[in-house]
Length: 134
Image (cartoon, rainbow, N blue to C red; front, side):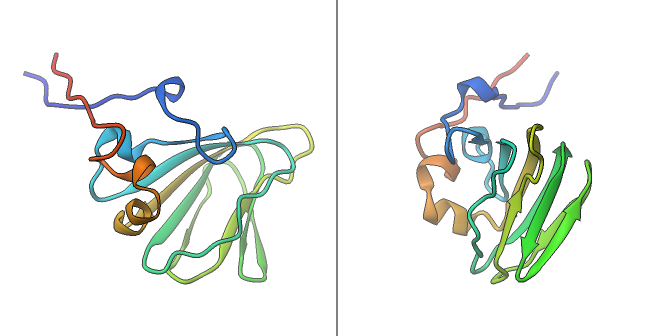
């Protein structure tokens, strides 16, 4: 017997951050971690920000990338990951002129993300998970 699981698809998720990102953690009902997939167009940078109590991990899945951490620019190659601790300002960016970058962004604990935007991150919010059984 298969275990319980929840599946979502990119096209089914609400647009987030200029329509290039989707938050998966809320719709999947994740209670311990927040995560986003971001399709970042060429020449675009995320908003420079910090999280009061959460770690954030950015994984460059495809394309070229940089992460600004404080005053430092960290070069990223596909499948590189970086963790930025609480209180540290950061932003991921795509320095390419013609290629999309694909990022997986993970944050934990989830509480700070849910408090800021419960309609995207909260498992009890607008996208209640639907368990599926085989």
